[in-house]
Length: 423
Image 1 (cartoon, rainbow, N blue to C red):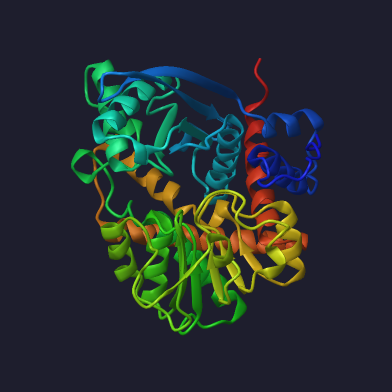
Image 2 (image 1 turned 45 degrees about the horizontal axis):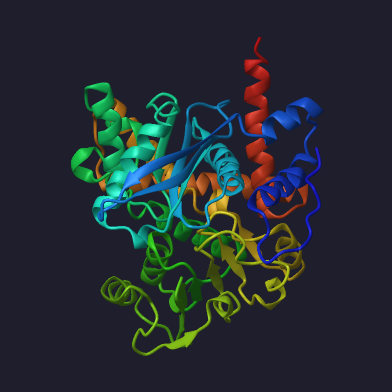
């Protein structure tokens, strides 16, 4: 299977991008043609169009998706995204990346993803609740603690998960906390879940610096998409002695070459709605932030931040991907030639799904862990996974992304062959 060649556009189609990445890695493995195609394409897809009653009494129709990419390793796992640019192809790509992410981390999950075409900032809390409960009802035919377990993603949060869990439970007649992860603590959420993805990015960046013989103390860090992932990664790296010099969100970027307090920036954003205008910083266009001089860059917004058009201008030594799919294959080639170490999304931001796994296990057993236990186990899995990916990349003489994908695809392919093809 070969991905189609696309006419260059402002933003590469995420699904074509995921297929290109898959093809590059799959070429290293002795996969039969049928198995290769089976591993690439989604197992099932659901698109729903559903009504929501708005605060003014009107009714709006929204479109949502849920895609299961693979069930070979276990139940499917993946977030739900609320964003106006959600497309079925984006959800397909995100579901595939989740399969590889779970496989790289050694989790007993396949990949899934969901999304609704909506700008959640334009809806009231009541409208968001109505939308979420109706969407959850529509996709409930694909959800279960044993089959498909959603989680938060861009535009959703623990409250969204609480509404989904409650909706699913009301339909079943009893409480089922393990049907989603990323829930608030009072209803079965896990300690450490809020920081998990950002903490994983920090650990990945730390391990990369250690491998390269670079001290984190005094290293300059730039992050994009200053939300739940990038803000946590920024302040945890700051705690290790890094200097945070740049950040951005959907409204713009800020920069101070001498550094700033990332926790103070987070407080500023909570109060004003954006990082823009943070005292002591210079405002920059969003697209310039990824090209700022730094030692560590963590792109944490949406897909396609670093492309063939701007990769040559990236000045970082290490890129730790906080978002899913922020670097295109064309950009990867350029970054490789520049000697920049890219820690791919399916490794760098795996902290979220790792702790989601812990939350799921706790929910099934109704036996809960301390935050210290959660963080210790997250650290162990992230460090182990980083070492395994690094080793694979060195053995195959390829970069970290392809090394991670080779490991991931190989594990799923092995499980598929052991299970056999039904019937």
